[in-house]
Image (cartoon, rainbow, N blue to C red):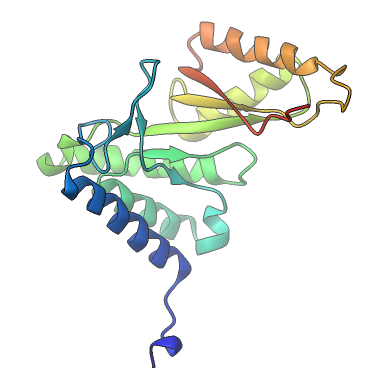
Length: 199
């Protein structure tokens, strides 16, 4: 019976994500381009184009237990046209695995004309800390640049969970200024917010 067929969770997720995005693309609901070839893009007021499908990279090793298998999975996504990946320095070895993937993909893409229709890989990472210092911002950014092997992440999402209930704790403003400084230095392309306490 079908209930006894064991399908790896990652393979199932890849298949359902691909099918959903391809269905949208085939129906012509959104236009694909080099940046968002599968599923098209969401309109944005900034110049940063947001694809409708972004590949999340939390727990890469927990799913595969092998960095090489994780890289192979990421390559399968890229070959299918999914070229934007979400990660964070707190996601274990995720950024380092993405860096290995980036290196292999660039070689493969250079050698294959069919793959050159896709735009460059894009990496959205996060800044998750409760330390608002310049040293912390510099350390996390340097780690991301080294692990990913890029000059600047395409997007850094500012994640701050240390607001006080009465709103008096505002060190996140200092942390935000440090990220803005790094952006001004060309070490971050775009900044966004995520997982901010609403108090």
